[in-house]
Image (cartoon, rainbow, N blue to C red; front, side):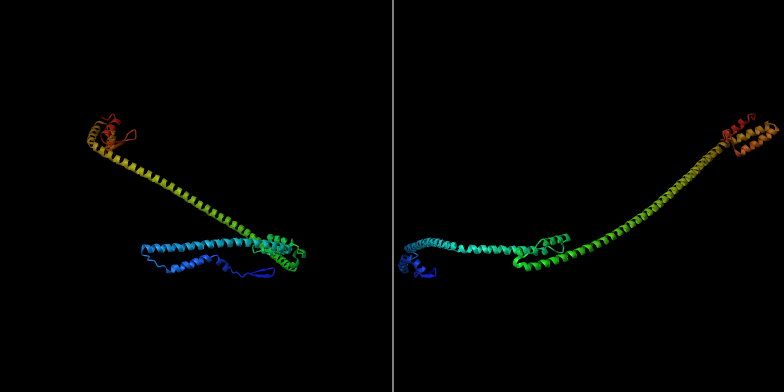
Length: 348
């Protein structure tokens, strides 16, 4: 084992294995003796004495295991204590070295930190410029692009700020400025063209609206006219139908009146025929009486009166009817005879 300190190397001739092995010398001796005895032992494991002897031998061997574990534990504990002591010494020595190192390291670290901050500041200022075009895309509006241009113009590129990266910054700044101006000009042209297109669309839409409203008005007027014609035709048809219905009802009423008159005439005719038949039936009996009485009158009245009465009597007998003072027909028979003689009281 070697240890180097301040350029000098110290050699230690004792090995770690030898140091550890010395702790197990007594156990090794005892184990060698027991192993010789154990090699010669023979037990009848089937018998009770043999089983007992074998178990006793196992117990002795296990006790050796316990001794080995105990020595190992003790050695390990000593080694751990030594290790902790060694660590303490090491840390103390290293702390002393660290103090001496920091005397020289702190100024170097301060310089490095200052340099890091300087480089970071330059890098951040540079990124502030390069991030601007990253915010421009296909959907970027003109106001947004003008805001990005304002952000770029607000950055002043100086050697104090950008130092060794000044030339690089100037190139990228000019490039981004040109790109932004080109984008803004194109955007303005696009907006102007879109405005013109929208204006044309609006004018066309207005013309289309006027044409559409005219067509709607004309269609509405045509529909209204068709509706008026249809309503007039419907009303005309309704009027004609009403007149036809009225004429039909009047015709039906006239026809019904005619039918009623025919029915009434038929009724009267039937009644007259019935009365005539009845009168004929009744007059057969009185005819002979009338003739007999007329013959008697002819004999009793004067010549002139007799001639007139005979003519009238013949007429009465032939017609068998006469109209009384109420305009009613006096049928033949007893009534006619009575009426005749009642009209001529002198004729008896």
